[in-house]
Image 1: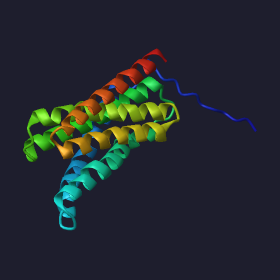
Image 2: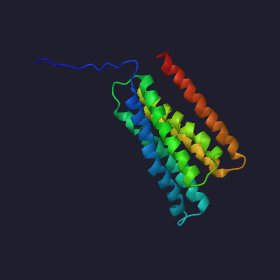
Image 3: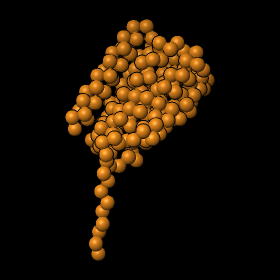
Image 4: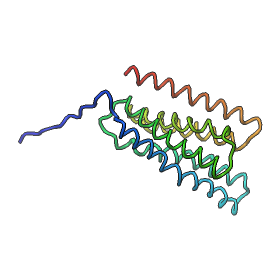
Length: 188
């Protein structure tokens, strides 16, 4: 019996424009129900606990765990991708997610755009960080890094006042890690 295997050739312009658009749109699509769900979950939990703890639980604990998994989920089905293409796909999913979340918060929930702007790129870079982990077969490690950064950012914003400094530092750490990993995949 002869076993035939098929090698997948990945071209330099992979993923192509259609795939890039698909993953960007998938980020937009999953963002809408997630954003609305977590916005409503805080209100619902407020019936059972103080508003502070309801928001803390829904926005700081559950949102990072569920959102980072939801954004990374399409990456688990991309076999034969290069590190560079997975990183790009992760970035595009997160960018779509962040863009949709930005417009929902600004247009529907009436949050000032300047407050939501860091989240737009934060989601993109965080999903790229998870994508890097997927490409290195270290998904859990990088997923938890992304969840921790997301938790720290949301937790800091929830506490307000001087905690905004922690949120700002978290964004800087997130962006720095993103660029560090980006440089690693560019060389590889």
